[in-house]
Amino acid sequence: KCIEDLKQNIIGYLATENKQKLNIQDYPPKYEAYQNLLNARVNYDKDEIYLQFLNNAINIDSSYFEPKILKIAHYYNLEDYKKADSLRHAILPSSSINKRQRNLLNLYEALLEGNNREIYKTALKEYNIAPFDIQTNASTMVVALQFVYKPESIDSIYNAISMKDMDLGNCIQCQYRYYIKAMADLELKKYDQVVSTMLPVTKVIDEYYLKIPLIISYVKLGNYDALNDILDKIKVTNTISYWGIANIDVAKEHLLLNNKSKAYEYLNTLLLEKKNLSDEILANTYFYLEDYVSAEKLYKKLHSKKPKEVDYITKLLILSEKTKKQNAVDFYLKRLNGLRGKYQFGAIDYAVAQFC
Image (cartoon, rainbow, N blue to C red; front, top):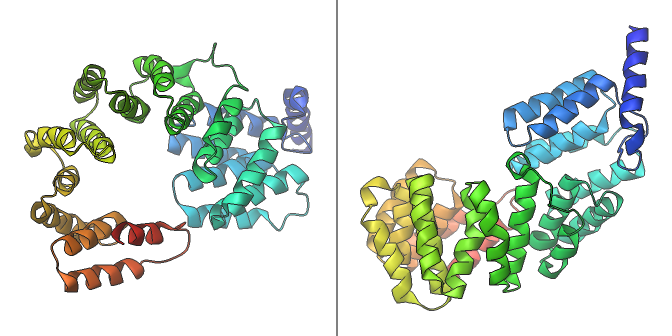
């Protein structure tokens, strides 16, 4: 056993010695554990397989820090914040934590506490160490845009890694980077830039979320031929649900532009397919059409199935106000405030603000 352990350590050192700057470990992991980590990275978009490889790496080498921090990140991204926090606390008692490991733990502590300033500070520290690591780079883009709202900072982070030779179909982090860059360009009103960035991407990857920046840009540019073309393609290549969501997104953009008649045009299109659409999509459709009676009926049905879903309660609260049902307003407001708890990051306050 000692000889096998020594062999694993030597091979692990040889496999990682040329990556000293990127190594989170002070000492190289066992080679088999390192192999499992590499397999996890390849399967990043397959939750169960990804987690299994991380667990394998930790079981083989209990001192291996990187799969532990990636496991915390995995549960955080799944919005299982309690599990992520529990895993973070399980690492803290160790006396062998170095500065970089401590910074990563501080990053997740800040994330789990909703401390955006500290999130940005610790994310930048990690980025400055490994700007060319694609996962670190993508995460920093997300933090800069969504946590501290610095869309003007995204280009410099994005441009640190060339996308020229990337295999987009097998690189989920590449796809995320394109999406965040496009969302930042939307905030900066660079709509033509969004189209030139995302149109080639959506021809390779048929994921709905990658089409969202394109849809918004086409609305802003008033390019209805391109907009209707992409909606038709979503209906054919994605599911009817995504087509329904896309039309609602288009309608909401028009409402933001105070173009109610155009918004209603896309919402009414959905009603022609209402037998094929979910109750949630129809509830949203009626809500934005200001058909409050129909919307309330469907939201009550949805709420009965998921009584703790914040969005359903929020919509019912707003609808009760619109239909002047004060008792219902008091009821749903009390129910909403009764859901307050840990790891919500202002969700209840935001819901109440929508009503106010």
